[in-house]
Image 1 (cartoon, one colour):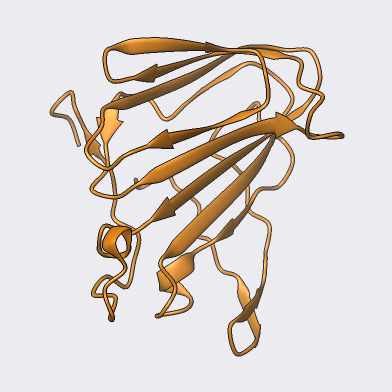
Image 2 (cartoon, one colour; image 1 turned 90 degrees about the vertical axis):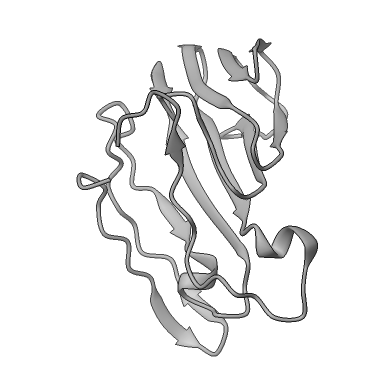
Length: 158
């Protein structure tokens, strides 16, 4: 993704990185985002997490795609996690899930998913994207991958 901003966190201690904010590629996400880059920062780590503060309708993760790794998406209230006031549709496989409650969604590797269509935002919410590399899905003794794989669009476009 050529228009993706460069994310660089600051190493403070062994296995401790200061999260540096970056601007979302989505115009409606105006607050700075943070992302822990997992194996790109800590070789032994397989977990990557990104956080965004959502205040307006937006479509995330389009087009429909698959990953060669497991993924979790968390949708929670921004002020109080359990106070969720938004209407969202999420495509998973051939199904469209309608979500108006705080939740997390597990997306097994290889499952078609997205877009995440945030149709209405009554109160700000937090979107969390969590993934582990394919190798970490079975937790081998050593992690072969040192970076998060990119997703493969299903519309045959790069």
